View 1 (cartoon, rainbow, N blue to C red):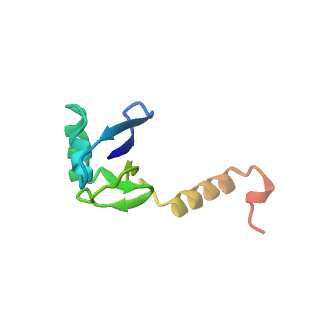
View 2: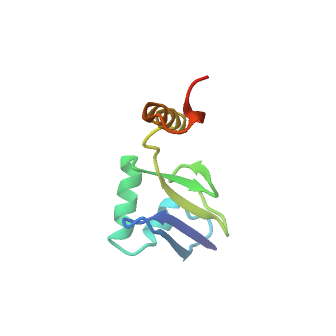
View 3: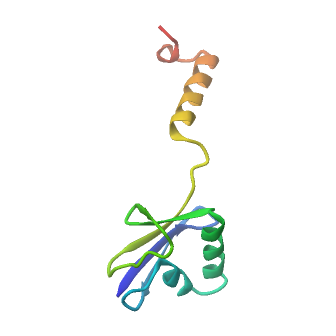
Amino acid sequence: MRIELAWVGAGGDVLLRSLELPTGATVYAAIAALEEPLGGSLREQIRDGALAVAVHGRLRSAESVVKDGDRIELVGGLVVDPRTARRRRVQQRRAEGGDARWKRR
């Protein structure tokens, strides 16, 4: 079966690899199919919790079985909750004075 593995590299570029795996392979097997030291580095980041595993955008465990045509995405965790980040940006813009739409009415 053929799957695609996607993650963001050190330079910020999205890296894609197409892999041919046996039926019943897991996410860990897909990562193990990558050349070393890349595969080992990615497995370590998943174990440490620095990367999460998603299949077609839905979070999965690294032991999940993949199917033909699946796209495995290795994603980093959120640094800041998006609502908190937006709240901080609004507070900063209000403090700067700027545009009238940021002022309280």
